Amino acid sequence: MDWLFLFEVVLAGIGAGGLYALAGLAFVIIYKATQVVNLAIGEMLMLGAYAFFAFAAGMQWPIPVAIVAAIAVCAVLGGVVERLAIRPMLGESPISVFMVTVGLGSIMVGVVELIWSADQRRLPEFIPNEPIFIGEAFVSPKIFYSFLVAVVLVAVSLVVFRWWRGGVALRATATDQAAAYAMGINVPRVFSIAWVVAAALAAIAGIAVGAIGGVSSSMGVFGLSVLVVVIVGGLDSVLGALLAGLLIGVLEALAGAFLGGEFKLLVTFLVLVAVLMVRPYGLFGTREIERL
Amino acid sequence: MRIATAKESYRQDEALFDSRTQRVWVCILALALILYPFMANDYWLYLACLVAINVASATGLNILTGYTGLVSLGQAAFMGLGAYTVAVMEQYVGAFFFLNLLMGGVVAMVGGIVVGIPSLRVKGLYLAIVTIAASFLAHFLFVNSGFTGGTGGMTVPPAQFVGIPLDTSFRIYWLIVPTTVLMVLGAANLFRTRIGRAFIAIRDRDISAEVLGIPLLRYKLLSFGLSSFYAGVAGGMWAYFFRVVTPESFPLIMSIFFLAAIIVGGMGTILGGILGAIFMTMVPEVLRIAVSMLPVSGDTLQYVSPVRTIVFGLLIVGFLIFEPHGLAEVWRRIRRFFHLWPFRN
Image (cartoon, rainbow over all chains, first blue to last red; front, top):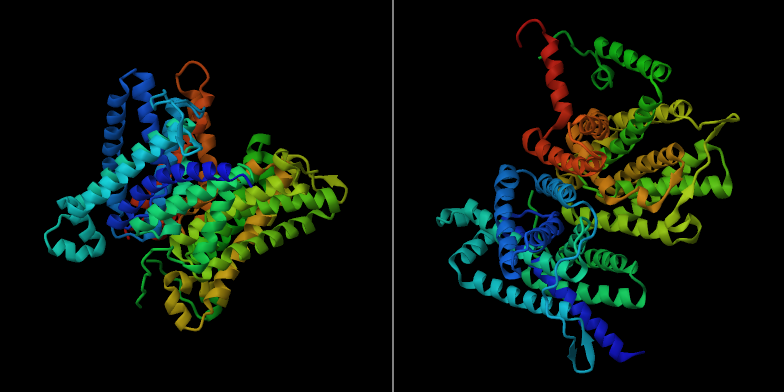
């Protein structure tokens, strides 16, 4: 057993896991606030990456401007999607809303393929390129910096949701919608905020993922891993999403290194099924109590 | 409101086709299905076979999702299981095609029951994700299990019926369409029995159903099994129709296609599964014609696939928001209009 190699693989896994955690956070924000399981999360990542691609490579804007513009565009899109497709479904069964997001994902993939074709593209290089060593172990700089970004963003979001007024409103809505209404919280606006914030976070995660592996219209597959992450962690648990993100990231890296690339998804899905069999609401999810 | 349809016995009340008008129309439809292959050209025969296969599979998914309320995104994977079983049976055993189709259904059924086991504890959306996991497992099996030809897939010889190879659309029509009709009738009859009623009870409120004495696990597994049996037979017909099976033939988007079909058609009605499958199969063809007529120079065909993806998504979202009961409800409205026509109702 080559311990250094193992250490490097685990580090790479933790790095990738940071992005899973970030995307998972975007997912959990939407779920907590609006009770919508958003299957289009991978496509939202993809849209962010492509928006960045359009601004940075297509229009030759400076990188920081392009990043901000891409995030802004996605945030607006998130708000529009909530208003046009999710709001009318208020009060419908969760399964119908879930299928609306399936349709939304399909639309986004189609739009991307129509504008940029299904071919894989490379994002312009903007992450510093010197190799980074932690002790003896080599970490790819792209993964290292994306992990850093993910950690900072997750920390900022947690702080914001702890103390900002809108964050408190969001948590109140998540706890009890009717009570939040009665306390004078504008619940529909909270829904909008949740989608806008989640779309912005997803866009950042998407840009990072695109910078590491290139962008293509099949980036939605990343969303499947994110789904596994949030379900293993428990749909309504931020802590669960963060821990499960790291866990799944490390597992995927180990499976990819020791079994081969085609085993990555297989292992994550096997973990998913195993966790669900033992704990049907995920590791940290709230157990739903059903009444007749 | 319909008049002059008083029922005098329970048999009449639960009959599939309860009025004379309906029976006449069914006879006309049957006649049309028999005459169709003699009138249509190859392209329309090809479409008819494809529609029939999709109707069979969508009806299966309707049993599971529309009637039992368990969302599945694994229908394509179960079709793949059926198709691969047929291919393997043809290659290594060479049995009669009917037996192969049945085996395809049974293997898919076993797969479905295995996937359904988590449904004991896992509900709703969690279950939908488990079925996605199942479709990735199936893809992995197709690529890596020695006797299935890896990523290259397998070719399937045409089905033989008393020495005649069913190798043209005209010949295979007589295999696919009767099988589909039989399966749809079977599904329609299922919901007149205890099992079908139990499915509906589980969909409406599973805890209440259990209180009423319906063993949840057994019936949920049964629903999974039946649904994937339909998918398996449909996949077997798919294999005989296209005569080549690869791991990429049954992607996740195909499962979404079937889910979209029953949403667009109307969940929880047999007619909905049929209408939805016909509609969703015809949409790409109509789009292809529409795109080729657009006054755009150059290669327009490259736009067909993305536009199709967009239209699928728009149809799902649009129907869920504006017509949640689907085409079946539209059909019912049209029919009601003619019940008392020309009087106002």
